[in-house]
Length: 247
Ligand code: OAD
Image 1 (cartoon, rainbow, N blue to C red):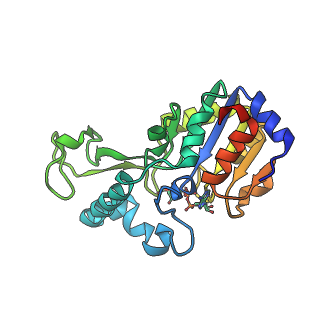
Image 2 (image 1 turned 90 degrees about the vertical axis):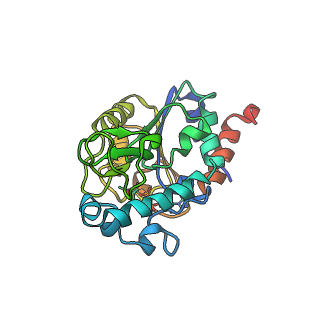
């Protein structure tokens, strides 16, 4: 793949890079995306039945079991070359912040140290009644487990449709856009707000946006560079092209 020399210069000169990621970054780890035709989760399941507070109130067993199934998928998944390349970037650029919509924790497992999880983390257990964060060892054998403090139902610590993003994560993400020199948008369909507005905001702040995705998305038109391909292939090549001595 050929990269524009100006892009490689901008990478080498950057003091702070922001990287916005979506499910496509974990696709090569074997974790299904949401909206890819055929393989996407929302092609096989209805989000309204599984990923809303109303669904959990209506049918907590089904929702808990669906997340337990996804946890198993993620437990067996390993970071792929895209996660690894982003973690390696930290040794080449003074500051790299990953802002992710993914709940699988793979960026941190790959070694990225500054990760903002906009949609929460599937490994966290939260009481739906009192909000307490509960450790795995404290989980009762009920489905879903019950809170050791108040007896409320435990839910996964992810953001569901109709819920607000965690305030601290959103505030930090907005701050990062003010200081970053470059903004990557990788493996996201950019359809779910408010997260999807971040690339537009970055662009409005005058940051060059670099899009990596095998498919076209609505953010191609605001991107300064569109790199068409899989993240696990494009990112390692890009890092190697910008810093040949790093490989
Ligand atoms: P989507 O499933 O909507 O989009 C995945 C994107 O990844 C698509 O644009 C694909 O073209 C792209 N893609 C697929 N394979 C790829 C690869 N190997 N490398 C790079 N890109 C690839 O997933 P998200 O945009 O992350 O929210 O979805 C956003 C949110 O919608 C999720 O966080 C989740 C979902 O419903 C909630 O559950 C609240």
